[in-house]
Length: 116
Image (cartoon, rainbow, N blue to C red):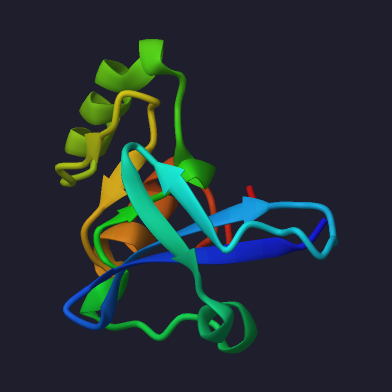
């Protein structure tokens, strides 16, 4: 299944991105709701990738997430590596910039593409 990218817009700029998997159909949703906020499908981000600019951050990184019961342990692990990472209630880390993302990946033993 392909990945569809949705953006939350503020002042004409994409502020936050989320990706969703959907089967290829003509009725792929144009908008979705995540945690009470509306996201619009972003064809430009899907086709051209996402530039590294302030609009990409903070990033809720589900690929580096932990179980909700492990959040405190993950925070301690990040702190041990000199990072102050916050987690949402689902256990996904909230990464504030690319440097922090790369450092957190190294601390977790994962390369920056998400592979162990």
